[in-house]
Image (cartoon, rainbow, N blue to C red; front, side, top):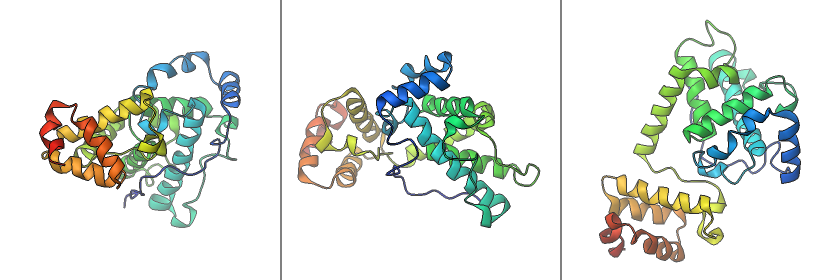
Length: 242
């Protein structure tokens, strides 16, 4: 048995989602080593798009939210289905947990790879289930193990690459929808990513039409995205046909 994929959405709320920027800064400075904090700047250009607007503290709370879900799914799948809602640690605040540096490092590792949190954690747990965890080892892997298991990380990265080849991965945050477009760095990066993904499809014309339909389903989106696509030489013929 494996853990199956949920629909790709951002949770409306999660523990830590309502923290102010000032509160996040205080929590980071008080709880996370300066060396770990110094690595954050470069991650803003590699992490999955939905997480780029988040403060690293909020992003880690979100990752922990998904880790807890994957942790419970592991137990429910490999050990005891009645215990599938088991949490990885007591309470809700990872900042109070003994493993807070490990959670932070795991989130940074996933951000470095540019993979969605729920995808990485689901695939990581399935990787361990397939190798006998739950039988020979009776507990789900902890964050420190996931962050340092190079063999597993390679396999999960390859699974993400296959997922991206199979279908275009869209950001779930409304920040990347047309009504909120203001030309910020993360929005422009997402726009470039989408155009590049469309260009890589076997039939860019159909991929462009699919993106127009799935992304916004409205005439304003089609007009906007088509005009942007015309700026890419590989998509000019395709765009002129829309």
